[in-house]
Image 1 (spheres, rainbow, N blue to C red):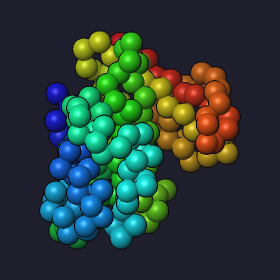
Image 2 (cartoon, one colour; image 1 turned 180 degrees about the vertical axis):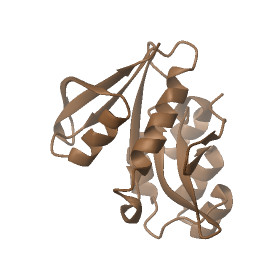
Image 3 (cartoon, rainbow, N blue to C red; image 1 turned 120 degrees about the vertical axis):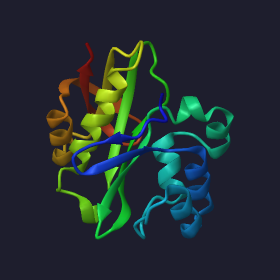
Image 4 (spheres, rainbow, N blue to C red; image 1 turned 60 degrees about the vertical axis):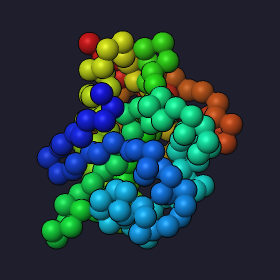
Length: 178
């Protein structure tokens, strides 16, 4: 089911495939664009960003892409007759004990246009409709006001804090399903 394309008012949310991840790891822009079927921004994820986003090496992703890439989608915008990747929504693998974790990012030139909220809301709605998924969590630093707004507008409520190894204290947000 994670292979389903989601359509929102302005975006096509296409599944991240192993082919796309492998293309990004090669840092070969034309291969990435062929794999995605869309233009990618010049700064679009290099290896370091992908490794942070997926919290796994390419080898680990290859071992079981259906588990690691569960629900992950690219935000694709139709712009001037061309498809352009403007960001992504990434889950951190299959839900654990009925809970999934989501993260999102939008390319700098497309920020503050509501794309993160639109895509996150649609992807989390999809996740919560999957069998056995009862909720979704997300974390963000307390200073990241734009990210907090995305989560609030996507139906999440603050549920506490936790320590993050790289970011220090982060806010935890949660959205429950049916």
